[in-house]
Length: 338
Image (cartoon, helix red, strand yellow):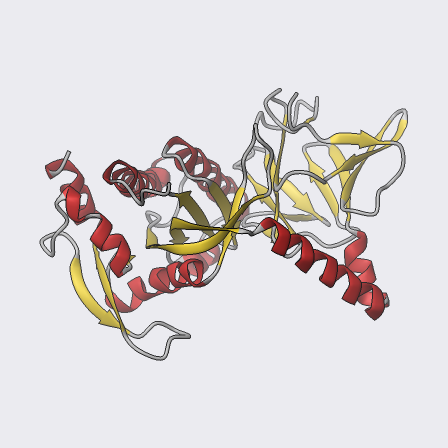
């Protein structure tokens, strides 16, 4: 299948997985993509014929700094790293032992070893990585960034059975990815108990159609989250907070023509994370930057739905204007302005 993990005869210098089979060890290169899915279904990058594995079991997420997250996608029998069940995205380390169902796989990332044993090699690797990133991130584009974070997650972990929590949160991450794809996100990254999505706008700017689609994605994510306790016996309904920011950033495509995988860096991205954090301070569900709010004017956005706030974001010297409100007001806005 297109995008499948490539088996190699011997381990490569880059990150790879080792799958033990009756015929011996099989090495699977993790080069070329930023996301690799694992499961029984043929639409995965790594298809494992193990009846204890779910159709869409887990995902590996490569990050811009060279690290890798392992994310369980709500599998029934769980994903384990070094004997511990995965409930939220976990950063993989060189030598980690992963179990999907009854299949054992080891993760290798020679970069981790180089960082611990050879400062010269580490310096060169960092320099090479920086050069690659610089070459890749070469287009300045207008983007909209959305950051969504699960609220009260610490309390949830203290009050929930580990197996139920793992299935519920894994399901949330899987459905969040599906929703973001449905609404045209250029990328979805999983960071701790948060999701980041990026929409890359065209030269003409952010259209009303695009902005409405972004708001619809937030609304759908909020609805999905609030209903999750109906499927899993959680101690309380899950909630999310969201930050939305629009601005220019350096954008590159780390995927292929068939599987574009955009990545973005800069203040526009950082501010989206800060905006999400500000929702807790302001007591709202959704906070958006000034440019995002202005882009919604053609859709009929007003302070009836999104109130104006002045807040000092962490890492910023001066207060900025933020517009936001509850998910109920967002839904009302979308219904009234179809």
